Amino acid sequence: MPTTVKQMVADANAVVPRISAADAKALHAEGKAVFIDLREPPEVAASGKVPGALEIPRGLLEFRVDPENQERNAALQKPVVITYCASGGRAALAGKLMKDLGYGDVRNLGGFKDWVEGGGTVEK
Image 1 (cartoon, one colour):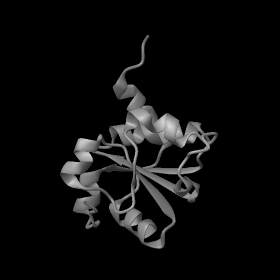
Image 2 (cartoon, helix red, strand yellow; image 1 turned 45 degrees about the vertical axis):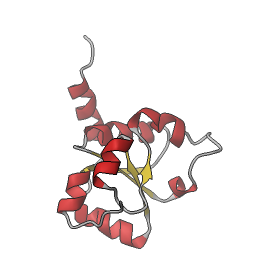
Image 3 (tube, one colour; image 1 turned 180 degrees about the vertical axis):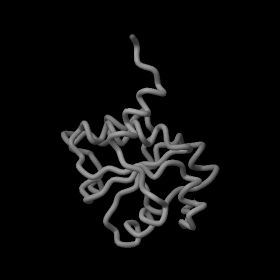
Image 4 (tube, rainbow, N blue to C red; image 1 turned 60 degrees about the vertical axis):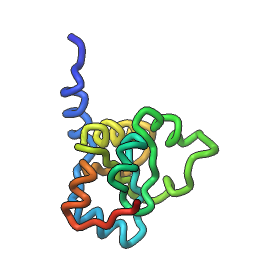
């Protein structure tokens, strides 16, 4: 039987732990995490992003985070990777992909709104 997107997201959520906005803010303040904004450029332009977050639309993620990509952003060397999108689905799928590529500590913040509602600052 074919897999559904709902099942794929559930499987990803089982592998990639969620992180609260408070915990994400603490890691951000300590500089121990790289944040990846998986939304499309118009989404980011409309609302801003977590300060310093890498803007990598979900459709380009595999190519941009591949450990064998010599042009990979050096920030991806940080000990923690935190993914987020608009509601958490893309972030879960991206987190699982990154774990499959060998990234160790990957966490899903969920949606950008979770960051904002948790008092996180916004970079325009």
